[in-house]
Structure formats: C-alpha cells, structure tokens
Length: 290
Image 1 (cartoon, rainbow, N blue to C red):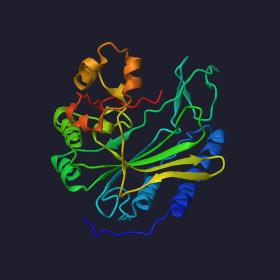
Image 2 (cartoon, helix red, strand yellow; image 1 turned 135 degrees about the vertical axis):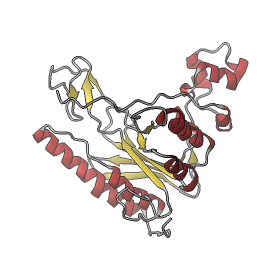
Image 3 (tube, rainbow, N blue to C red; image 1 turned 180 degrees about the vertical axis):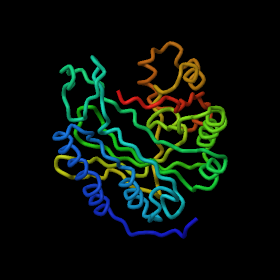
Image 4 (cartoon, helix red, strand yellow; image 1 turned 60 degrees about the horizontal axis):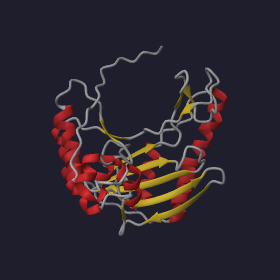
C-alpha cells in the first residue's frame, strides 16, 4: 500500500469540483447531443475519483483506476442513473434523455431506465482476497434523481466495510458459485438501493443535491467520523422474511399496512437475513450492429 497522502478539503472545493467535472460537462454533452443525436451520457468514473478524494480528504495515487483508487487503499465505485439511455414502450426504440417522444414512432410512452449499477471485476482468488481482506473500505458513489421528472441530481456516497458478513458472502458467492463455474461470466454487479446493497450495512458519508439549472450544489450531509446507517426499506423483503422478523404481529395485516407500520428493517435484524441466490449472466452473445 502507498503512503497515505491527505489533502485539505472543504465544501467550497467539493462544489467547485462538481461544477467543473460534472455540471459543465453534463450540460455540454446535452448541448451536443441535441445537435449530433449522439449519446448525452458522459463517463463520470474519473470525476468520481476526484470527488472521492475531496469527500474523504485522501489523495489518489494517479493510477487511472488501475491500482489503489485512494492512497489509503480504498476501492471507489461509481454509477449514474441520472441520464441513462431510455426506450420506447411501444416500439422498443432507444430514446435519448432529452427527448420527450420516441424518435421512431413519436410515442410519448417512454420507459425511463434507472438500472445502472456498480461493477466489480473479480477474476482470481488473489483479486477476491484483495477486495475482502486487504482493502480498508469500499466507497460507493451514486448519481440519481428523486423522481423521473426532477431536473435536480442527487449525489450520494457510502462507505462499506469489506469485512462485513454480507460483503464477504456476496462476493464469495459470485466468485465460487458463478465466476468459476461459467466459461465467460459477466462481472459482479451490485445494484444500488436493492437487497444486497442494504445487507452490506453501507454508511452514508455524503449527500448533496445538485441544481443543474442554477449550477448550485446543496450539501445536506457530510460526515466521515459519524456516518449514518442506511436503513433497508421493508418492501425489499420476501414474505417468509417478514414472517420470520415479525411473526404473528403481521398475521392480519395487508402488505400496505405492514409497510406503513414497519417502514424499515430493524438494523439489528440484518444479520438474521440470509444471502439470496444469484444467477450471473455470461458474456457469450456476440455484438450485432443491426
């Protein structure tokens, strides 16, 4: 591991970084997308590396994501659900983020995609061991929106302990039960705000809202010393898990009533919930242009 190099950070620096590396490039991509009809989605993996340094106060090591992401050995993953390529519900044609109607059939019934996820490449036991036993923490960064119609962008960052029980189980399950058993398996995907994410007991360390129009960022929360637990919404549990947790307390309640009375899974009960079986796709399909 490299020597830990710290930097003096501030809210002002974070806001300036967001303006320079996210808002301005995003606006430029949209501008040129409307002219060229090319994608409006930029690649924000590297800007997220810069943001992770400013959020944590830890410098990188200049490896272009091919070594330690931060000089303390942290692994940084990012994804954006804010400007994904969507699709027409009527004809299946692709729809750019700024298009209000399908360019192929003119339908306004658009399936706005929000399924982007964090990707982990684990191709050997050594890489698995590095992730689970040597890396001090995983930092997950997510750009998304509160709702489909919102123009504001939400930026959040979580810290995950690789030694956490479900983190170990999740990645070991992928490697031994999926990667090693398939000829050409896809990478390991971790989906934001879904069951496995919450089971990893992520701690929120940063939360901000980005007003694209006014180019202003409102930092709602930023605390590495006292991060907040991220509670799992109760609706992510299966029926048998609900019964296991609450027993006869929910026997006469409808799903709606259960969700209202118990909106979140009690944090202390997370360890009593098991890992779910996953099926990893293979990368065997050849690319077909038309």
